[in-house]
Image (cartoon, rainbow, N blue to C red; front, side):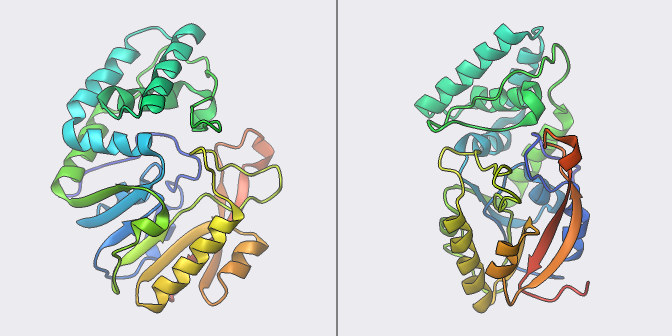
Amino acid sequence: MTLKTLPFVKWAGGKGQLFDRLKLRMPDSYKRYYEPFLGGGAMLLGLQPEQAVVSDTNEQLLNVYMQLKTDAEAVIAAVSELDGTVCDTEFYLAQREKYNDKIRNRILDTECAALMIWINKHCFNGLYRVNSKGLFNVPYNNRVRGTSIDAENLRNIGTYLRNADIDIRCGDFEKACCDIRAGDFVYFDSPYVPVSDTANFTDYTKTGFLEEDHVRLASLADSLARKGVLVMLTNNNVPLVHELYQGFEIEETSVRRAINRDASKREGSEVIITSYKTGF
């Protein structure tokens, strides 16, 4: 039975609104599912494949998935305890510093997972941004009270991750695809090529995602397609992307970007790229 599962964090570039369009354009059948840029997990949680390899470079994010898989009830209890305190700027900054201490010391535990979820609901515009040292630096959004989780959703995510064959890896996208084979399906949702010099937002990790990384990703996508892997990607509808993916199927689609601080720039154009024909 498919469980109802949704992303537990707001994530820039999350695929909630594109999910139905992407699902329709997926291959009819495939072996293992790969998602090297997991993020908020809208695709994984929406599809719920029985076999999957998922990855990200943000180890705090992956820790949440691991903790939910191990003991969702412990995560729920820890977030609920945080929600039990009336929040103000001082309390928010104290929790943010506690979270950053976890990052500094690479402590990946239940409390770290709970802090990440709670902070996501109390930081400005739900942004996840770190500085050059990898420390979270988004300010408080003035939310005083409220529930930061849907407990049943977290339970369902934990149940799905335990019952399915899900390999959670931390690291670069090329490493995540080291054992991919012909007939497998991979969905790449990398940080996007910016639409302007001021629109670049790749600060999910301290290393960012540069143009050379986009070139490397396009090269990987091409080599995988040539050996029979079914490849899908999404990105901004900009000239560089069209140049990098010549020979692939490229379909333009409109989106709404909820995290842009300028409301006039929340409408955008993206592309769905596939190594196979989709019928659209």
